[in-house]
Image 1 (cartoon, helix red, strand yellow):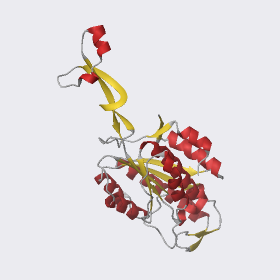
Image 2: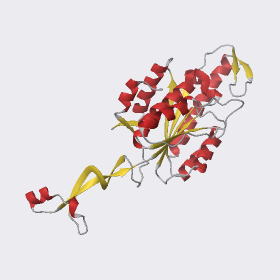
Image 3: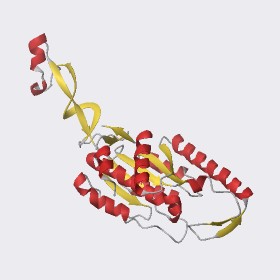
Length: 289
């Protein structure tokens, strides 16, 4: 659960998204329509409702002008939270949960939001801060999936093809280390086919990127397989994982989505929470209201 201090900061922010729909709701867009937020004037046209004529402007100028208002727009937010065994390295799982809690807190003021796990389970779609405790409980209780590699790419593809979305009105935030040997492109193609606005928050541990050199016993946290390696193998691994991150980022950007690499550095929840908030703002995922 995030701290009261973070909640006070988050109250000043909203989610940044291209997924602004034509459906009414509580999130404001920048195009004209009917709402309580003033947008602009334009000269009166036949058919305009007289209640929207600005009679004070008419009294000053002798010309009829119609008041325009900002259209109300809403989005559905889907947060995909990856909780496989590989996320247990370097507090990645805890950091991922905090990211999901920060984002869901901001979202439920403006959008209907839902948390999805990679095993197919999902929270109830909720809207409004009164229900945030239920969402946070679901996040905190998300089980760590064990027993073998989890097909991240297949899970992403299944999510995109299996859900019902209002076209152009859904924002998807993927929180994962994205470690999967399968190519990412099929999942990205599924996201594009459903006209989703998506951001990929790739959470990595320092140990993922730069493990200490030496004589090491490497354990695959997904399968339990063990391998003894030396400095040469460690350096080869570093090059391989850096290449993997570059390819992943390039594929996501080429598909028209956003990618953010989030190395975990904090050692306690308060530090992780502060880091998560700062990164979300710096990367433009959160913007000031």
